[in-house]
Amino acid sequence: MGGTVAPIDDEDRWLRSALQAAPMPACRDLTSVVRRRLRRANVARTMTATMTLLAAGAVGWWAFQRETPSAMPREVAFSRAEARELAALFAPPPVESFDILNQQQAAYAESLQHLAQETH
Image 1 (cartoon, one colour):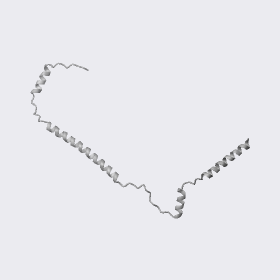
Image 2 (spheres, rainbow, N blue to C red; image 1 turned 60 degrees about the vertical axis):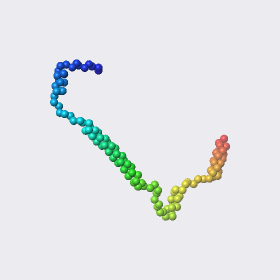
Image 3 (cartoon, helix red, strand yellow; image 1 turned 180 degrees about the horizontal axis):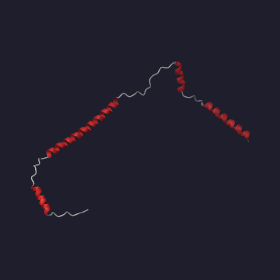
Image 4 (cartoon, rainbow, N blue to C red; image 1 turned 90 degrees about the horizontal axis):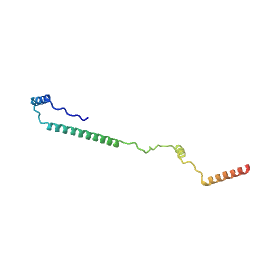
């Protein structure tokens, strides 16, 4: 979109000289005003970030300080009969010794051999 700039004609020159000659109010130095506004904006941004971090820290501290429920169960008193029943309920299942298991396996093998001899 490269275009050429139109040449300045007489009307443009006249408008330019009229605007430059028109009385304009004096403009004071705005540097101090701009700096003050930028400083206020920076202070506001810093305060917002600081308050956000403080609020997050307070919420974290409050959550950490809250009393958490104990993982330990409460002690409950049982009668002797209830204690025996509970002990039987939560006792590990009875496991047969290897001798009994070996005897069962031998009996199964013998009965299968006997069954195989009868069928042949």
